[in-house]
Amino acid sequence: MGEIYAGGTLARLPSPKLAGALRFFEYAPKPPLSTLATLSRIGKQLPSKAALSLVCPKGTWLTPKGAMRKGPELDAGIDWITRVSDILKARAIVIATGAELTTGERDRTLLAEFVERLRSTGRILVVAPRGLWEPEHGSAFATQTNTVYGFDPLESDAPEGDIVYARIRPMGARPRLTEGHLAQVAERLLSPEAEQAYVAIDSDKPLQDAKRLLKLLAEVQSADFDPGPEDEEDDEETEVSDDEQDGEAESSDD
Figure 1 (tube, rainbow, N blue to C red):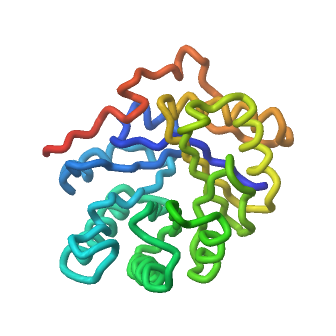
Figure 2 (figure 1 turned 60 degrees about the horizontal axis):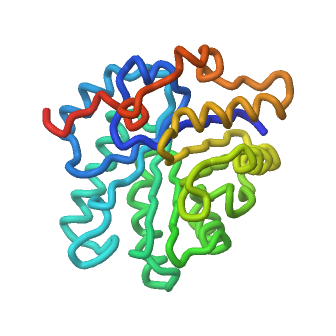
C-alpha cells in the first residue's frame, strides 16, 4: 500500500486554520449552495497541502425529469461541478447516488454519460452508487468506465486498482465507529497493492474518527508510514468543536 489519506466528509469548507491540520477531506455541500465567488474566496485561503474531493450535490444531477436526464438543468449542474472542482483544485470528484439510479441498462447508460462529461476536468472520478447497487455492480461499472469505485470498507473488500477510495457512513446497526470497525477498515485498506488510498468518514465526529483510523494504521503499517499532519499534533491541539467537524468557514451568501 502506498500513501493513505484519511479525513472527514464536511458539509462546509473548513477554516484555513482547521484545513491546515488536515491532509484530506471530502467536501459534500448541501443546499443552499454557496456562490462561486464565495467558494473562490475561501478556496484561495485553503492550504495547498490539504487534498480534497468534491461530492457532486444532488441538485447538480437530479433534474425535474429524473436522475441525469439531458437538458439545461443537467448542463448547468455539470458546469457548476466543473467550475467548483477547478476553484478548489479538487483531487477527485465523487458521484454518489442512491435509489435515484437503478442497475438497469438505461440508468447505467445515463451514469456513464454523466461520467464522460466530467472526464475533461482531469480529476479522479469516483462512482459511489448505493440503493440497489451491490458492491459487485459498482465495482464492475467502475472497471467498465475507467473510474474508481467508492466502496464501503465495512461492507466489502477494496477493489483492485492503483487508487482505492473508501467512504464510511456509520448508521443503522453501526451508529458509531468502534475500534473493531476501524480495525476492519485498516485491514481492508492495507491489503490491496494500491498507490494511493483515500478514506472519507461521514460521522458525527468525522475528523476525530479519521485521526483514530490514522493512528491505528500507523500501528499496523511499516515504520516508514507517514500518518500526515493529523498525528503530528497533540490531542489537545487537534480537538475541534462540533461546528468545526462540519467545517466553519463557508457562508451560503457572498
